[in-house]
Image (cartoon, rainbow, N blue to C red):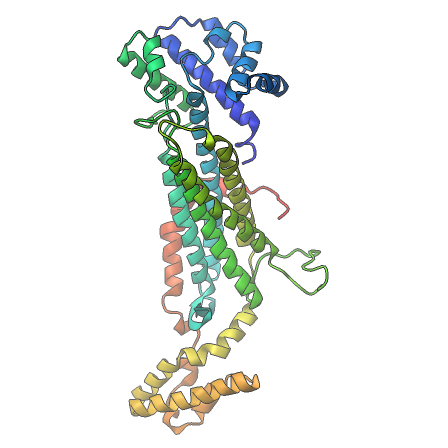
Length: 463
Protein backbone atom coordinates (compact mmCIF):
# COMPACT_ATOMS: atom_id res chain seq x y z
CA UNK A 1 0.00 0.00 0.00
CA UNK A 2 2.89 2.34 0.66
CA UNK A 3 4.15 1.58 -2.84
CA UNK A 4 0.75 2.36 -4.36
CA UNK A 5 0.69 5.78 -2.69
CA UNK A 6 4.40 6.50 -3.16
CA UNK A 7 5.81 9.47 -5.03
CA UNK A 8 7.41 7.05 -7.48
CA UNK A 9 4.06 5.49 -8.38
CA UNK A 10 2.35 8.85 -8.64
CA UNK A 11 4.83 10.55 -10.93
CA UNK A 12 5.60 7.49 -13.05
CA UNK A 13 1.83 7.24 -13.60
CA UNK A 14 1.84 10.88 -14.71
CA UNK A 15 4.52 10.04 -17.25
CA UNK A 16 2.50 7.08 -18.54
CA UNK A 17 -0.45 9.42 -18.96
CA UNK A 18 1.67 11.87 -20.95
CA UNK A 19 2.85 8.96 -23.10
CA UNK A 20 -0.70 7.72 -23.68
CA UNK A 21 -1.78 11.27 -24.56
CA UNK A 22 1.03 11.73 -27.06
CA UNK A 23 0.46 8.33 -28.69
CA UNK A 24 -3.27 8.98 -28.98
CA UNK A 25 -2.73 12.47 -30.41
CA UNK A 26 -0.37 11.02 -33.00
CA UNK A 27 -2.98 8.39 -33.94
CA UNK A 28 -5.62 11.04 -34.64
CA UNK A 29 -3.27 12.95 -36.93
CA UNK A 30 -1.34 15.45 -34.84
CA UNK A 31 2.31 15.95 -35.91
CA UNK A 32 3.99 13.85 -33.23
CA UNK A 33 6.87 11.63 -34.30
CA UNK A 34 7.74 8.07 -33.38
CA UNK A 35 11.09 9.33 -32.10
CA UNK A 36 9.33 11.64 -29.65
CA UNK A 37 7.09 8.80 -28.47
CA UNK A 38 10.08 6.49 -28.01
CA UNK A 39 11.91 9.14 -26.03
CA UNK A 40 8.98 9.48 -23.63
CA UNK A 41 8.75 5.71 -23.26
CA UNK A 42 12.43 5.50 -22.28
CA UNK A 43 11.89 7.76 -19.27
CA UNK A 44 8.76 6.48 -17.55
CA UNK A 45 10.39 5.52 -14.26
CA UNK A 46 13.78 7.28 -14.02
CA UNK A 47 12.42 10.30 -12.18
CA UNK A 48 14.95 12.84 -10.94
CA UNK A 49 13.11 14.05 -7.85
CA UNK A 50 15.80 16.59 -7.01
CA UNK A 51 15.48 18.19 -10.44
CA UNK A 52 11.69 18.20 -10.18
CA UNK A 53 11.98 19.81 -6.76
CA UNK A 54 14.14 22.62 -8.13
CA UNK A 55 11.66 23.24 -10.91
CA UNK A 56 8.78 23.32 -8.42
CA UNK A 57 10.59 25.74 -6.12
CA UNK A 58 10.89 28.09 -9.08
CA UNK A 59 7.54 27.49 -10.79
CA UNK A 60 5.33 26.87 -7.73
CA UNK A 61 3.39 24.30 -9.76
CA UNK A 62 3.89 20.58 -9.28
CA UNK A 63 2.57 19.39 -12.64
CA UNK A 64 4.58 21.90 -14.63
CA UNK A 65 7.64 21.05 -12.54
CA UNK A 66 7.37 17.44 -13.69
CA UNK A 67 6.65 18.49 -17.27
CA UNK A 68 9.98 20.35 -17.19
CA UNK A 69 11.77 17.46 -15.44
CA UNK A 70 10.57 15.07 -18.12
CA UNK A 71 11.45 17.53 -20.85
CA UNK A 72 14.99 17.77 -19.48
CA UNK A 73 15.60 14.05 -20.12
CA UNK A 74 13.41 13.85 -23.24
CA UNK A 75 14.35 17.08 -25.05
CA UNK A 76 13.03 16.01 -28.45
CA UNK A 77 9.63 15.31 -26.90
CA UNK A 78 9.55 18.50 -24.83
CA UNK A 79 7.38 20.43 -27.34
CA UNK A 80 4.56 17.88 -27.24
CA UNK A 81 4.50 16.90 -23.55
CA UNK A 82 1.13 17.80 -22.00
CA UNK A 83 -0.16 19.04 -25.37
CA UNK A 84 -3.73 20.31 -25.02
CA UNK A 85 -4.06 19.04 -21.47
CA UNK A 86 -4.80 20.77 -18.22
CA UNK A 87 -3.10 19.64 -15.01
CA UNK A 88 -6.13 17.70 -13.84
CA UNK A 89 -6.24 15.68 -17.06
CA UNK A 90 -3.04 14.21 -15.67
CA UNK A 91 -3.67 14.29 -11.92
CA UNK A 92 -7.27 13.06 -11.91
CA UNK A 93 -6.68 10.17 -14.27
CA UNK A 94 -3.61 9.15 -12.27
CA UNK A 95 -5.57 9.36 -9.02
CA UNK A 96 -8.28 7.08 -10.37
CA UNK A 97 -5.68 4.52 -11.46
CA UNK A 98 -4.07 4.67 -8.02
CA UNK A 99 -7.44 4.42 -6.25
CA UNK A 100 -8.24 1.35 -8.31
CA UNK A 101 -5.00 -0.37 -7.28
CA UNK A 102 -5.47 0.62 -3.64
CA UNK A 103 -9.04 -0.68 -3.57
CA UNK A 104 -7.80 -3.93 -5.08
CA UNK A 105 -5.38 -4.39 -2.20
CA UNK A 106 -8.09 -3.64 0.36
CA UNK A 107 -10.40 -6.14 -1.33
CA UNK A 108 -7.75 -8.86 -1.17
CA UNK A 109 -7.09 -8.23 2.51
CA UNK A 110 -10.80 -8.28 3.32
CA UNK A 111 -11.06 -11.57 1.45
CA UNK A 112 -8.15 -12.95 3.48
CA UNK A 113 -9.93 -12.13 6.75
CA UNK A 114 -13.17 -13.68 5.47
CA UNK A 115 -11.29 -16.84 4.48
CA UNK A 116 -9.71 -17.19 7.92
CA UNK A 117 -12.94 -16.49 9.77
CA UNK A 118 -14.66 -19.08 7.59
CA UNK A 119 -12.11 -21.72 8.55
CA UNK A 120 -12.38 -20.83 12.23
CA UNK A 121 -16.18 -20.90 12.09
CA UNK A 122 -16.24 -24.40 10.62
CA UNK A 123 -13.75 -25.66 13.21
CA UNK A 124 -15.90 -24.31 16.05
CA UNK A 125 -19.36 -24.65 14.55
CA UNK A 126 -20.49 -27.07 17.29
CA UNK A 127 -18.81 -25.44 20.30
CA UNK A 128 -21.70 -24.13 22.36
CA UNK A 129 -21.17 -20.79 24.05
CA UNK A 130 -23.24 -18.29 25.98
CA UNK A 131 -24.92 -15.76 23.72
CA UNK A 132 -25.28 -12.14 24.75
CA UNK A 133 -27.79 -9.43 24.03
CA UNK A 134 -27.26 -6.04 25.69
CA UNK A 135 -24.09 -7.75 27.00
CA UNK A 136 -26.37 -9.76 29.27
CA UNK A 137 -26.51 -13.57 29.13
CA UNK A 138 -28.93 -14.76 26.45
CA UNK A 139 -29.74 -17.93 24.54
CA UNK A 140 -26.74 -20.09 23.64
CA UNK A 141 -25.07 -19.92 20.26
CA UNK A 142 -21.81 -21.47 19.07
CA UNK A 143 -18.35 -19.99 18.78
CA UNK A 144 -18.44 -20.75 15.07
CA UNK A 145 -21.80 -19.07 14.55
CA UNK A 146 -20.53 -15.93 16.28
CA UNK A 147 -17.51 -15.92 13.94
CA UNK A 148 -19.86 -15.89 10.95
CA UNK A 149 -21.37 -12.65 12.26
CA UNK A 150 -17.93 -11.07 12.04
CA UNK A 151 -17.29 -12.63 8.64
CA UNK A 152 -20.62 -11.38 7.33
CA UNK A 153 -19.69 -7.78 8.17
CA UNK A 154 -16.42 -8.21 6.30
CA UNK A 155 -18.26 -9.81 3.36
CA UNK A 156 -20.64 -6.84 3.16
CA UNK A 157 -17.63 -4.52 3.22
CA UNK A 158 -15.94 -6.55 0.49
CA UNK A 159 -19.01 -6.38 -1.74
CA UNK A 160 -19.03 -2.61 -1.31
CA UNK A 161 -15.31 -2.25 -2.04
CA UNK A 162 -15.56 -4.44 -5.14
CA UNK A 163 -18.56 -2.49 -6.38
CA UNK A 164 -16.85 0.83 -5.75
CA UNK A 165 -13.72 -0.34 -7.58
CA UNK A 166 -15.71 -1.60 -10.56
CA UNK A 167 -17.57 1.69 -10.73
CA UNK A 168 -14.52 3.94 -10.93
CA UNK A 169 -14.36 5.94 -14.15
CA UNK A 170 -11.45 7.87 -15.58
CA UNK A 171 -11.80 11.60 -16.04
CA UNK A 172 -10.64 11.32 -19.65
CA UNK A 173 -9.40 14.33 -21.62
CA UNK A 174 -11.59 17.32 -20.81
CA UNK A 175 -9.38 20.41 -20.52
CA UNK A 176 -9.46 23.37 -18.18
CA UNK A 177 -13.19 23.50 -17.38
CA UNK A 178 -14.32 20.15 -18.75
CA UNK A 179 -15.49 21.47 -22.13
CA UNK A 180 -12.70 19.87 -24.21
CA UNK A 181 -12.18 23.26 -25.89
CA UNK A 182 -8.38 22.84 -26.07
CA UNK A 183 -8.63 19.45 -27.75
CA UNK A 184 -11.31 20.72 -30.11
CA UNK A 185 -8.95 23.52 -31.10
CA UNK A 186 -6.04 21.13 -31.59
CA UNK A 187 -8.15 18.98 -33.90
CA UNK A 188 -9.55 21.88 -35.95
CA UNK A 189 -13.06 21.69 -34.50
CA UNK A 190 -13.53 17.98 -35.31
CA UNK A 191 -15.68 16.70 -32.42
CA UNK A 192 -15.53 13.11 -33.63
CA UNK A 193 -11.74 13.27 -33.63
CA UNK A 194 -11.84 14.50 -30.03
CA UNK A 195 -13.98 11.51 -29.11
CA UNK A 196 -11.56 9.15 -30.88
CA UNK A 197 -8.64 10.79 -29.09
CA UNK A 198 -10.24 10.25 -25.68
CA UNK A 199 -11.21 6.66 -26.51
CA UNK A 200 -7.65 5.82 -27.60
CA UNK A 201 -6.27 7.49 -24.49
CA UNK A 202 -8.52 5.50 -22.14
CA UNK A 203 -7.77 2.27 -23.97
CA UNK A 204 -4.04 2.82 -23.59
CA UNK A 205 -4.31 3.52 -19.88
CA UNK A 206 -6.26 0.29 -19.54
CA UNK A 207 -3.79 -1.94 -21.33
CA UNK A 208 -3.08 -4.95 -19.14
CA UNK A 209 -5.13 -3.60 -16.26
CA UNK A 210 -8.72 -4.59 -17.13
CA UNK A 211 -9.51 -1.01 -18.11
CA UNK A 212 -10.07 -1.67 -21.79
CA UNK A 213 -13.82 -1.44 -21.35
CA UNK A 214 -13.71 1.47 -18.91
CA UNK A 215 -15.81 4.51 -19.60
CA UNK A 216 -15.07 8.08 -18.65
CA UNK A 217 -17.20 10.17 -16.34
CA UNK A 218 -19.95 11.59 -18.60
CA UNK A 219 -19.34 15.22 -17.69
CA UNK A 220 -17.04 17.05 -15.31
CA UNK A 221 -15.52 20.41 -14.55
CA UNK A 222 -11.77 20.62 -14.24
CA UNK A 223 -11.62 17.59 -11.92
CA UNK A 224 -13.54 14.38 -11.58
CA UNK A 225 -16.38 14.92 -9.06
CA UNK A 226 -15.02 14.88 -5.53
CA UNK A 227 -18.11 12.99 -4.41
CA UNK A 228 -16.25 10.00 -5.88
CA UNK A 229 -13.63 10.42 -3.16
CA UNK A 230 -16.42 10.64 -0.61
CA UNK A 231 -17.84 7.37 -1.94
CA UNK A 232 -14.45 5.68 -1.73
CA UNK A 233 -13.75 6.85 1.82
CA UNK A 234 -17.25 5.80 2.84
CA UNK A 235 -16.54 2.31 1.54
CA UNK A 236 -13.30 2.25 3.51
CA UNK A 237 -15.21 3.35 6.59
CA UNK A 238 -17.64 0.44 6.21
CA UNK A 239 -14.69 -1.95 6.17
CA UNK A 240 -13.22 -0.13 9.17
CA UNK A 241 -16.50 -0.52 11.05
CA UNK A 242 -16.34 -4.29 10.42
CA UNK A 243 -12.82 -4.31 11.86
CA UNK A 244 -13.89 -2.27 14.87
CA UNK A 245 -16.90 -4.44 15.68
CA UNK A 246 -14.96 -7.69 15.44
CA UNK A 247 -12.11 -6.34 17.56
CA UNK A 248 -14.47 -5.02 20.20
CA UNK A 249 -16.07 -8.45 20.48
CA UNK A 250 -12.69 -10.14 20.80
CA UNK A 251 -11.69 -7.66 23.49
CA UNK A 252 -14.87 -8.44 25.43
CA UNK A 253 -14.33 -12.19 25.05
CA UNK A 254 -10.72 -11.74 26.13
CA UNK A 255 -11.94 -10.24 29.38
CA UNK A 256 -14.16 -13.30 29.84
CA UNK A 257 -11.10 -15.50 29.14
CA UNK A 258 -13.02 -17.32 26.41
CA UNK A 259 -11.40 -16.25 23.13
CA UNK A 260 -8.17 -14.29 22.81
CA UNK A 261 -5.97 -12.91 20.07
CA UNK A 262 -2.57 -14.59 19.53
CA UNK A 263 -0.02 -14.03 22.26
CA UNK A 264 3.66 -14.83 21.75
CA UNK A 265 5.73 -16.85 24.22
CA UNK A 266 7.90 -13.87 25.19
CA UNK A 267 5.28 -11.18 24.72
CA UNK A 268 4.81 -8.69 27.56
CA UNK A 269 1.27 -7.62 28.29
CA UNK A 270 2.06 -4.90 30.81
CA UNK A 271 5.22 -3.29 32.16
CA UNK A 272 3.72 -3.17 35.65
CA UNK A 273 1.44 -6.23 35.72
CA UNK A 274 3.35 -9.24 34.37
CA UNK A 275 0.33 -11.57 34.40
CA UNK A 276 -1.65 -9.56 31.85
CA UNK A 277 -2.48 -10.59 28.27
CA UNK A 278 -3.74 -7.29 26.93
CA UNK A 279 -5.50 -7.54 23.53
CA UNK A 280 -3.11 -4.98 22.07
CA UNK A 281 -3.52 -6.08 18.44
CA UNK A 282 -7.26 -5.61 18.52
CA UNK A 283 -6.81 -2.36 20.41
CA UNK A 284 -4.45 -1.11 17.70
CA UNK A 285 -6.86 -2.17 14.97
CA UNK A 286 -9.79 -0.38 16.61
CA UNK A 287 -7.70 2.77 16.87
CA UNK A 288 -6.82 2.62 13.18
CA UNK A 289 -10.40 1.81 12.23
CA UNK A 290 -11.72 4.77 14.20
CA UNK A 291 -9.30 7.04 12.33
CA UNK A 292 -10.54 5.73 8.98
CA UNK A 293 -14.17 6.25 9.95
CA UNK A 294 -13.46 9.79 11.09
CA UNK A 295 -12.25 10.82 7.63
CA UNK A 296 -15.55 10.26 5.86
CA UNK A 297 -16.95 13.58 7.04
CA UNK A 298 -13.79 15.25 5.76
CA UNK A 299 -14.44 13.84 2.29
CA UNK A 300 -18.06 15.04 2.38
CA UNK A 301 -16.85 18.53 3.30
CA UNK A 302 -14.38 18.56 0.43
CA UNK A 303 -16.99 17.44 -2.09
CA UNK A 304 -19.53 19.95 -0.81
CA UNK A 305 -17.23 22.97 -0.90
CA UNK A 306 -15.94 22.73 -4.46
CA UNK A 307 -16.89 25.98 -6.27
CA UNK A 308 -18.41 25.83 -9.73
CA UNK A 309 -15.94 24.13 -12.14
CA UNK A 310 -13.34 23.64 -9.38
CA UNK A 311 -11.37 25.20 -6.55
CA UNK A 312 -7.97 24.21 -5.22
CA UNK A 313 -8.75 23.71 -1.54
CA UNK A 314 -9.31 20.01 -2.27
CA UNK A 315 -5.71 19.34 -3.28
CA UNK A 316 -3.78 19.63 -0.01
CA UNK A 317 -6.62 17.90 1.81
CA UNK A 318 -6.78 14.93 -0.54
CA UNK A 319 -3.02 14.39 -0.36
CA UNK A 320 -3.58 13.46 3.27
CA UNK A 321 -7.09 12.02 3.48
CA UNK A 322 -6.88 9.55 0.60
CA UNK A 323 -3.54 7.82 1.26
CA UNK A 324 -3.87 7.92 5.05
CA UNK A 325 -7.32 6.31 4.95
CA UNK A 326 -5.99 3.49 2.81
CA UNK A 327 -2.79 3.06 4.79
CA UNK A 328 -4.63 2.94 8.12
CA UNK A 329 -7.20 0.42 6.91
CA UNK A 330 -4.50 -1.65 5.22
CA UNK A 331 -2.66 -1.90 8.52
CA UNK A 332 -5.84 -2.75 10.42
CA UNK A 333 -6.64 -5.56 7.97
CA UNK A 334 -3.13 -7.00 8.31
CA UNK A 335 -3.75 -7.13 12.05
CA UNK A 336 -7.13 -8.79 11.49
CA UNK A 337 -5.61 -11.46 9.25
CA UNK A 338 -3.14 -12.23 12.02
CA UNK A 339 -5.78 -12.28 14.76
CA UNK A 340 -8.41 -14.30 12.90
CA UNK A 341 -5.80 -16.81 11.78
CA UNK A 342 -4.62 -17.46 15.33
CA UNK A 343 -7.54 -17.23 17.76
CA UNK A 344 -6.86 -18.84 21.14
CA UNK A 345 -10.02 -20.58 22.41
CA UNK A 346 -10.43 -21.60 26.06
CA UNK A 347 -13.14 -24.25 25.96
CA UNK A 348 -13.19 -24.87 29.71
CA UNK A 349 -14.00 -21.22 30.44
CA UNK A 350 -16.64 -21.20 27.74
CA UNK A 351 -18.24 -24.32 29.26
CA UNK A 352 -18.07 -22.89 32.79
CA UNK A 353 -19.80 -19.65 31.81
CA UNK A 354 -22.41 -21.54 29.84
CA UNK A 355 -23.06 -23.98 32.69
CA UNK A 356 -23.46 -21.13 35.15
CA UNK A 357 -26.21 -19.49 33.10
CA UNK A 358 -27.76 -22.33 31.11
CA UNK A 359 -30.47 -23.34 33.61
CA UNK A 360 -31.75 -19.75 33.58
CA UNK A 361 -31.58 -19.63 29.78
CA UNK A 362 -33.67 -22.81 29.53
CA UNK A 363 -36.21 -22.06 32.25
CA UNK A 364 -39.02 -22.04 29.68
CA UNK A 365 -37.90 -25.45 28.38
CA UNK A 366 -37.90 -26.79 31.94
CA UNK A 367 -41.40 -25.50 32.53
CA UNK A 368 -42.69 -27.04 29.29
CA UNK A 369 -41.00 -30.37 30.03
CA UNK A 370 -42.83 -30.52 33.37
CA UNK A 371 -46.10 -29.67 31.63
CA UNK A 372 -45.53 -32.50 29.13
CA UNK A 373 -45.02 -34.90 32.04
CA UNK A 374 -48.50 -34.07 33.31
CA UNK A 375 -47.88 -31.16 35.67
CA UNK A 376 -50.22 -28.17 35.50
CA UNK A 377 -48.53 -25.52 33.40
CA UNK A 378 -49.17 -22.70 35.84
CA UNK A 379 -47.90 -24.73 38.75
CA UNK A 380 -44.73 -25.57 36.80
CA UNK A 381 -44.28 -21.89 35.94
CA UNK A 382 -44.56 -20.86 39.57
CA UNK A 383 -42.14 -23.55 40.71
CA UNK A 384 -39.53 -22.53 38.11
CA UNK A 385 -40.00 -18.87 39.05
CA UNK A 386 -39.53 -19.46 42.78
CA UNK A 387 -36.53 -21.77 42.36
CA UNK A 388 -34.92 -19.46 39.75
CA UNK A 389 -35.18 -16.44 42.02
CA UNK A 390 -33.70 -18.38 44.91
CA UNK A 391 -30.82 -19.66 42.76
CA UNK A 392 -30.15 -16.18 41.39
CA UNK A 393 -30.07 -14.73 44.90
CA UNK A 394 -27.54 -17.41 45.88
CA UNK A 395 -25.33 -16.56 42.89
CA UNK A 396 -25.51 -12.81 43.37
CA UNK A 397 -25.63 -12.61 47.14
CA UNK A 398 -23.22 -15.39 48.08
CA UNK A 399 -21.07 -15.74 44.98
CA UNK A 400 -22.03 -19.41 44.90
CA UNK A 401 -22.78 -21.61 41.91
CA UNK A 402 -26.14 -21.79 40.15
CA UNK A 403 -28.05 -24.61 41.87
CA UNK A 404 -31.35 -24.27 39.97
CA UNK A 405 -31.20 -27.82 38.61
CA UNK A 406 -30.48 -29.25 42.07
CA UNK A 407 -33.48 -27.38 43.46
CA UNK A 408 -35.74 -28.62 40.68
CA UNK A 409 -34.45 -32.19 41.12
CA UNK A 410 -35.75 -32.09 44.69
CA UNK A 411 -39.17 -30.75 43.66
CA UNK A 412 -41.84 -33.46 43.16
CA UNK A 413 -43.31 -31.49 40.23
CA UNK A 414 -40.15 -32.30 38.24
CA UNK A 415 -39.74 -35.92 39.31
CA UNK A 416 -40.51 -37.23 35.81
CA UNK A 417 -38.40 -34.65 33.93
CA UNK A 418 -34.95 -35.60 32.58
CA UNK A 419 -33.27 -32.37 33.65
CA UNK A 420 -29.92 -33.17 32.03
CA UNK A 421 -31.54 -33.83 28.67
CA UNK A 422 -33.58 -30.63 28.82
CA UNK A 423 -30.49 -28.60 29.74
CA UNK A 424 -28.20 -29.98 27.07
CA UNK A 425 -26.11 -27.08 25.78
CA UNK A 426 -25.79 -28.63 22.37
CA UNK A 427 -29.52 -28.93 21.97
CA UNK A 428 -29.98 -25.28 22.89
CA UNK A 429 -27.94 -23.77 20.03
CA UNK A 430 -30.68 -24.13 17.43
CA UNK A 431 -29.42 -24.25 13.83
CA UNK A 432 -26.08 -22.63 14.60
CA UNK A 433 -23.93 -25.38 13.08
CA UNK A 434 -26.13 -25.62 10.01
CA UNK A 435 -26.02 -21.84 9.55
CA UNK A 436 -22.23 -21.90 9.72
CA UNK A 437 -22.01 -24.56 7.02
CA UNK A 438 -24.42 -22.69 4.78
CA UNK A 439 -22.62 -19.38 5.28
CA UNK A 440 -19.25 -20.88 4.41
CA UNK A 441 -20.72 -22.55 1.34
CA UNK A 442 -22.69 -19.55 0.06
CA UNK A 443 -20.50 -16.61 1.12
CA UNK A 444 -16.97 -17.69 2.00
CA UNK A 445 -16.39 -20.18 -0.82
CA UNK A 446 -17.24 -17.70 -3.60
CA UNK A 447 -14.75 -15.26 -2.05
CA UNK A 448 -12.10 -17.99 -2.04
CA UNK A 449 -12.81 -18.76 -5.67
CA UNK A 450 -12.45 -15.10 -6.66
CA UNK A 451 -9.14 -14.53 -4.86
CA UNK A 452 -7.56 -17.97 -5.01
CA UNK A 453 -3.99 -18.56 -3.91
CA UNK A 454 -3.45 -14.88 -3.06
CA UNK A 455 -5.34 -15.46 0.19
CA UNK A 456 -2.43 -17.42 1.61
CA UNK A 457 0.20 -14.84 0.70
CA UNK A 458 0.34 -12.99 3.98
CA UNK A 459 3.42 -10.87 4.69
CA UNK A 460 5.51 -11.49 7.78
CA UNK A 461 4.75 -8.50 9.96
CA UNK A 462 5.46 -7.58 13.54
CA UNK A 463 1.96 -7.02 14.79
